[in-house]
Image 1: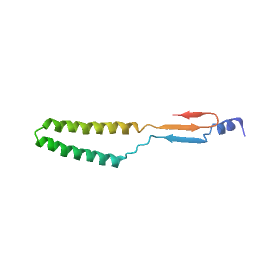
Image 2: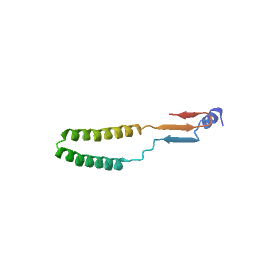
Image 3: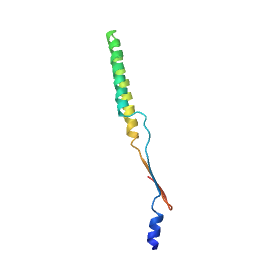
Image 4: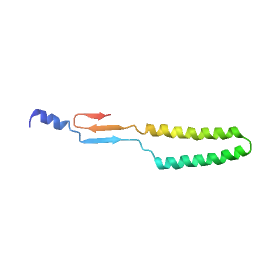
Length: 94
């Protein structure tokens, strides 16, 4: 075995891992949650609209939009990844 082959074997990683953040609410759960929020907003908004409090109808819609934006930002952050590779001579974290 030559010197270059020995150094190549020492640099071969013996452990590799891909770390991703855990999200407890998947796509189906997100759609169900948003559907329930929209349904609740429509019913509550219709009640306020029937009583003449029309500005409340719009503000309830803003709440649903804010929840939607917050979930989308959270799902975008879930794309973060870390790759870890361990060999005899190095520890690489990307």
